[in-house]
Length: 525
Image 1 (cartoon, rainbow, N blue to C red):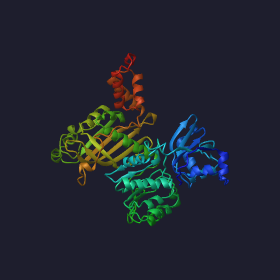
Image 2: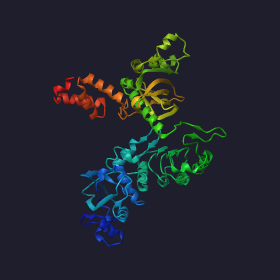
Image 3: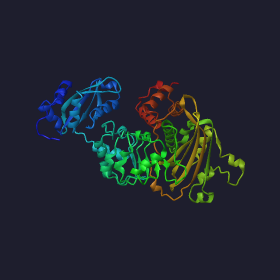
Image 4: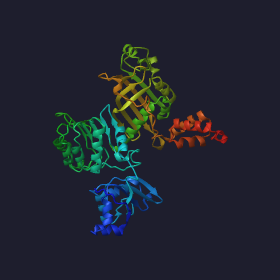
């Protein structure tokens, strides 16, 4: 790319000028600006507000393949939208060949107007590197040496400023290069849902430490796409959801084909393939992706609330006639020495000697009693990246879900334990599931794990209120009203403003109350 000290004089490209450029016209000023690396170009989409941002950008990037550009600062201007881009001479040339008219799968063609040399990089400074490094660091789990780049371009902090889908090879290469610089070791790399059609950047990056590679739901057409990872020691690989899966008539052909490119494979799509004559077995199994998503959301939602210091929020997840019990596998004398007496006090163990009537006291029935039982256990932090879960039963009305993993007990001397939990859920109105039975089992880990190896950023993971149901919102509304004495309209207003995060709502209320910003009418029921 050229860099020149010539003054920047912006030039606007419309369809007529784009045709002249694509026809080979000299257009010296336009071509000079297109080749400069020290300027930002502005790409305007006429009436772009009618369409989803991602649909627009994908359509433009598809139209310029194999050229690439990185859209920055996508925003609306009236009914139009625009973004900025730089270092993209090849991409601009390809845009000219489309006459600045882009096919749009979401409706009418997109009409573009490009302002070459919209601003200099000196006047408009956008440092994207810190944003990318922050996003990568956030997605890295040092305990498991795992990097989760699922739908990387949709990262909420990143996508506000930059659109960088990994299906663009230059972008993918740059992200892997940053990973090598910023992150010491990556053994588990998750690349789900990035629309990847080849893996060449992985070969170039020389990420030789990768052992587990998740490529589910991409655009890999044939198994030959795995050629770039031949030299990696991949032991676990996920390919489900790629077009290549349709190329095989039976599982044996599929496995043999994958082994040609990953000879060290032990698991493929969650199935142990080194069974030597025994049937193939799944680690987890789901009939379809929507069920897997449902289970994943439920598990995240439940354990986020469970690890919060106030377990009262869990009440609405249980049905009115639900049952809950907890069994503890560590012997009582050992548990007391380790400071785990809170578990033994709630232990329901059929093998344990004692009065059966006392044992029945540890079977909790009903929402309120269950919350009492849950509050008896010590504060905790569940390491979600260690979870293994399964959908054991599903008839459309009832689900049975099992989940197991590591649990960090937050007592005076934190300890890491192993847990298993089996939930029975029943479908209710408004597509809402409630727990009708919850069986909780806690035991020691097979090998002692130091508490520092299960790190939580804060003692209790903050609640991310993404999945509040109608009943949960009603419960939060009642609690907020009891705390503030506000009427329902004001309570609803405070809670909706912060996406039903009760703590933030209370803080906002206190702030307004201190400054006399709360009307007296707000307290009238």
